[in-house]
Image (cartoon, rainbow, N blue to C red; front, top):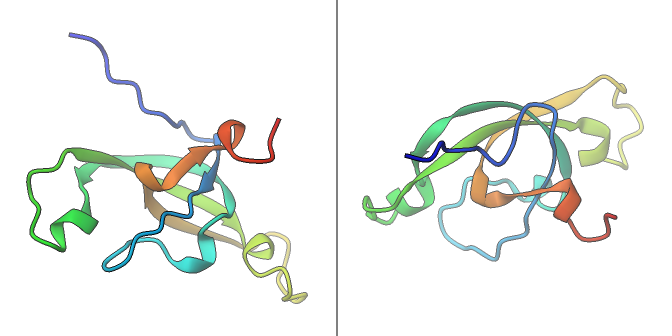
Length: 105
């Protein structure tokens, strides 16, 4: 049996995708399109977006904690200290690697 390799490891740079989903989604609008760093892997779970509509047959999806600089999230707020961060749990399908994100070389 082949070993399962997670896409991301702590310290990897990621970008939150702009998925055009409506209804029950687990991603706040203010982090969509933003770049962050993987803090750790939380486990693999059924997709809560599917569970909200009664679909319990889907595969488990990796869940990660991702850290964002508050200044990157709220660039117009000049009073945010440089060391302030937001850590949020995000499912794998909402993330792309920084290397594969648009505008990166």
